[in-house]
View (cartoon, chains in turn blue, yellow):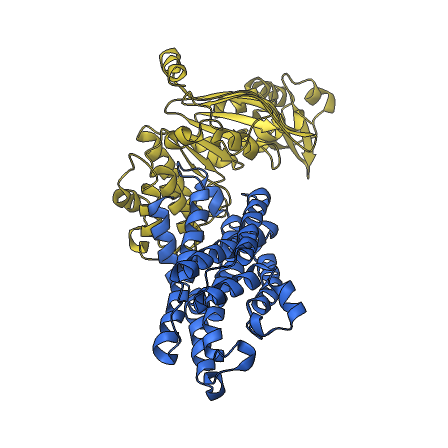
Amino acid sequence: MNTAVLRSEFRLFRREPGAVFWVFLFPTLLLVILGSIPSFRHADESLGGLRPVDAYVPIAVLIALIMSGVQTLPQALTGYRERGILRRMRLTPVRPSALLSAQMAVQGTVALGSALLALAVGRLAFDVRLPRQPAGYLLALLLAVAAALALGSVVSALSRTTKIASAIGSAVFFPMMFCAGVWIPVRAMPHALARVVQLTPFGAAARALDQAAAGHWLGWGHLGVLAAWAVLLTVGAARWFRWE
Amino acid sequence: MYRRGARWNSRNMSVIEVSGLRKSYGGRAVVDGVSFTVEEGEIFGILGPNGAGKTTTVECVQGLRVPDAGRVRVAGLDPFTDHEATSRVLGAQLQQSELQAKLTVREALELYAAFYPDPADWRPLAERLGLTDRLGTGFGKLSGGQKQRLFIALALIGNPRVVVLDELTTGLDPRARRDTWELIEDIRAQGVTVLLVSHSMEEAQRLCDRIAVIDQGRVAALDTPAGLIRRSTGSTVISFTPSAPLDEGDLAALPALASVAHKDGRITLSGTDETVNAVLTLLARHRITAHQLRVTDATLDDAFLDLTEAAV
């Protein structure tokens, strides 16, 4: 990792108001809007006695990861390739992979920051308990970030142009949002549906975060699914990514 | 690698050596046995029609492509296997590349300077390239000429021994072209060897010490600009409007004649100095006056067309 490239990429990210809004602010904003609805602050049987606003904190966290993984990251990576920025970089002593890894580090860091913001606002504004199993929560979160970045790299690898990247990104975006539980929290889904959703990266991540938030040490099943996705997608990205 | 470099130093002063270079795409030979050497401190041109294999040749020199066969050395280094070491001695501007739209000129210069162990100070470089009042401007808001100048600055920022400039002045206005040419002469005056890829004859004639004309993946000719013009078949062009018709047979018998053309009563001949003398003698003998007589040297343009057509 080249620190000059990393600093430069971080500065450039801050200059993109769209990316800053959707990755960093939108998930928490959604949490605030939902939390302002009175019925979201009453305990719900289908959520095992939790209030919907409690259930939506991990969902907001996952929205941040999905936004950066399938929306902003593939756009950035594909644009760097399409516009010859990687090619120019190949003529310097620094490898173009430095640019890709810096971009991933920035996206991952901002997504994690967005997750922390959602947790903090949930705690301060809506009295949502912080995860009772912080180590497990962090582990699940890091694996989910890895899976999200790998998914974004695969989207970029399969897209020759930024237009294609944005089309594939949108096609992947809604199913991922559904699996993360944006419309119905995974734990409130019908049993058969939940079983399928838990096999997707963000379905598994949603369950793992729920468990850690409730104070259970994580089930290996969900973590295993998440880790398998992260590895699989990384291998796919490495195999399919073209520098030009 | 080090020993090979040392041997190279003691042997000669070639900065770039290309021999027997071949590269095919999908079974079609794009570069088919190209060889040339570029000496230290020279401006060496690679000229050729579109699709002749110029860019592929240069990409092999830059280490962006692996040759199928042949040998490429830059300062004694293999640009593909020794990419990092090569990139420290070779700076380049690419025909098509961009930077991040919101990266400012200053940030780009600072960032690229940080890539090199012993970079040039970017301030005088920016000054020399007329970028000083654009330091805070994002790449996306620069004009074509300014982008081009920034890429030249980035090619020079690592203090390279050799720079590769690919189609540098394409798309620039005449004024900016002339400024850029002065800049290239300036770069060479500082001791940097220049490999210039171009399809502008005017540019090559003005700047290059030697030129390799590449056509259909081969070196069609390698010489100084004057040498290329001299060796082309019609290096001198004579044109005039005769006061009375001339005998075709007399014209065809002129020595060293390359071509004859008639248009609107005007005759255009190409040949050598010998042809000029013979035409003048012929006209005097028949007491024919040559109106609007013009004798011009062929340009590199003519030589180029001649060379690349001959290869077809």
